[in-house]
Image 1 (cartoon, rainbow, N blue to C red):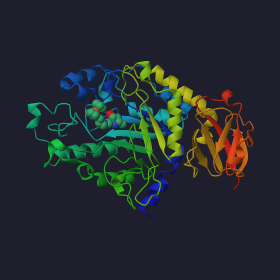
Image 2: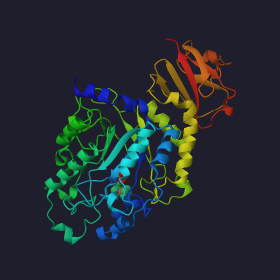
Image 3: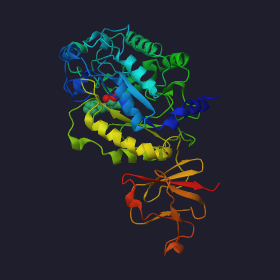
Image 4: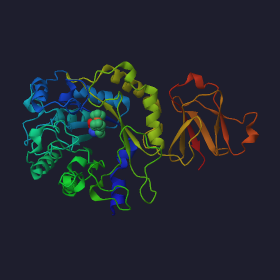
Length: 436
Ligand code: H79
């Protein structure tokens, strides 16, 4: 089997799942100014170390996180096992900079895995390729590094091989010590203009030893789905081995589905924050996305053959912020009665309608009504093609009837939805069974 087919097979569950929870959690929850705080505020390792000394999330109870994810309708989760600051939420033999050496003394990853697995949610690990803590990660001249302007770092020698061994070793630990892992989310490759002409100019594929890494990962976890941030080309006719299984746009909705060089649809996932920050931050209420907005984006991803991974940033005590819980629960209320229009659904062959979006599963076409308008919705090209029309959330019959000016649109079907106002303002979904 070629790599294109292998990828399609491996990502089947992933593309059916459509909706996941991203969890950004680490020492940065204490300053509560986002996960880049050490960099943006140019903190020395000593200054940042106060958070390591203090870290003690006494109310960390991942069972509650997992229940919330399930209630929201999420099918998989991705936790930061290590972010750019280098702090490990798991018990690694390669470092002392880990949660088991903080006041809480717990392997936070282990508890996360057990809790989410218990709820039937697939397990993903985020792992940062950047590492601002490891002495052999090239600090000096690195625009990604908080200490880049300090003289003391400029002359430092960095044994890159050590770092590569370190991070490959940690990936091996993560994929060996916690049972079946469904997904790995590396972050990220980049070009380093400040280090032109050095071995650190291209922080991508070969620099990370991506081929060896992915080969090892496939031995340890043959079915694992991997993102595309190690480098390599995911859009070739036969994608590179290390190019990963899905494309990972960050915060920006793609204008259409993702396709390869032959125009074939390829897996993708949009990752999004709820509140302009990944790590915990003391946000203002108005910085939160509305429930309606998040639902619309989830539907939009599915209507373009993609997934959505929505982020929560638990606080220093280990709790997901109240406002995030509220939004996720409201999404859950919608998902409870409308998820048939999300799971396993794909882009429809029909064009985007003027009142919302379509998603489709076989001969079931789901019409997501974002703009209720008044009364009559035009379904271009569907005259005579609809066998049955129902409101998805309660199974109520919907009449297909031509309005007074219907003869102007001979090929179009019309749905009379005078009761639209009674249904969900965020997105009322019609289930249209098409004649085969
Ligand atoms: O983990 C989340 C981000 O921390 C990470 N990817 C997601 C999933 C990410 N790291 N870097 N980037 C994304 C892109 C770089 C953004 C930056 Fe900036 C612009 C770095 C410095 C300027 C954003 C704004 C972070 C600090 C200020």
